[in-house]
Amino acid sequence: PVGAPSVLFNEDDSEPSVVDEGNQIAEGETVENNKYKPYRYQRQIVWRNVALFVYLHIAALYGAYLMFASAKIATSIWAILLYQMSGLGITAGAHRLWAHRSYKGKLPLRIILMIFNTIAFENHIYEWARDHRMHHKYSETNADPHNAKRGFFFSHVGWLLCRKHPEIKEKGRGIDMSDLERDPVVVFQMTYYLLLMPVLCFLIPTCVPVFMWGETWSNSWFVATMFRYTFTLNMTWLVNSAAHMWGDRPYDKFINPSENIGVALGALGEGWHNYHHVFPWDYKAAELGNYRANLTTGFIDFFSKVGWAYDLKTVSTDMIRKRVDRTGDGTHSSIWGWEDK
Ligand code: ST9
Ligand code: ZN
Ligand code: ZN
Image (cartoon, rainbow, N blue to C red; front, top):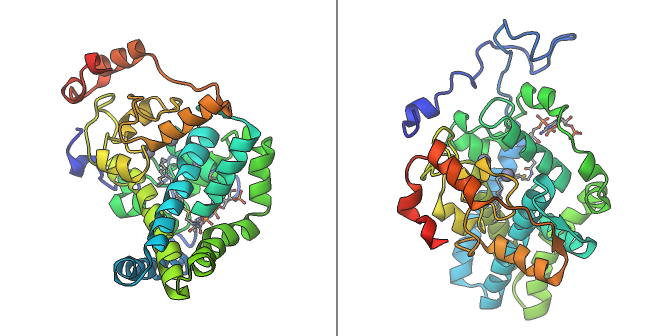
């Protein structure tokens, strides 16, 4: 049924079937033992988050306007630099290093990535990685925090605007996070997050343009902070929404994640999402290692040369070829033949 959105995104297993007072699981009840009853779930909107995200997006639109109307060029360059640094804190850091362990990082690299990650304010590394491990293990079910079967809006941002589905909390207990609990860099960030995050995501990005090149407070706040932060968030969210809907599926046509070059460009190499869901341990998060729309791979390779990134995991051509032959949708050779590698 791949390619037919009405089949792919039907909501019948995701939407509330029985209205209940809350999301609580009754005592003694688990997801498993109440499977003969419809699971009790009612979407509960968190209005504080709705208000914050509405403000963020209006402020970001104003920032985009100011960027062209009155901001200094240095402020725009600063905003782009922050987007790239914070983006790498998500892609090379929270995603490929901490959530997937697709390579190992020495202490100095982990500290840099933790700082970059904090600029991004996408929750601390531990929470991000826990949600992401759930996203892979229970992909597109109720236990996936941004279940794409609930539609574009839910998987893009809606999941951050309401209480989590009880199955996430229930099944999430079984997710092993002990590796991150042993990493002092992750623990440090988690412990001081409410202090570090406002300083690194909001305060420093706003103060630098004002004190370094005489930018106005208004331009600085709306361009370097509001626009840059909201833009980076949306680039990240597109991996969960657009790259779970649109694009080829050369490695596995039976899953929704797709190869989406637009998302790959905006998300620093994270749009090759069909490959990534099939081979999540590959540090490239894509088949090709030649930095085809994949800045993050270039970043990890650079630090591998420095010696701070090591044990880079990847997948053999033979294994990929077998998988393409078995489950691919036939687009593999039309995009890039094996001989191109
Ligand atoms: C943001 C994150 O934007 C974006 C992540 C995107 C991921 C993309 C992945 C794609 C691949 C990589 C591509 C990268 C591309 C990057 C490109 C860059 C250019 N497992 O959450 P709570 C339990 S954040 C296990 O409060 P509620 C747990 O016991 C934006 N257990 O649930 C937990 O307690 P604790 C800024 C879990 O009350 C308890 O439940 N941040 C799990 O339902 C309660 O958890 C915000 O806006 C789990 N997975 O609230 C904040 N989850 O934590 C938004 C939960 O103490 N968040 N439990 O252990 C919130 O306000 C709330 O979380 C909520 C849900 C309202 C959404
Ligand atoms: Zn995904
Ligand atoms: Zn992943």
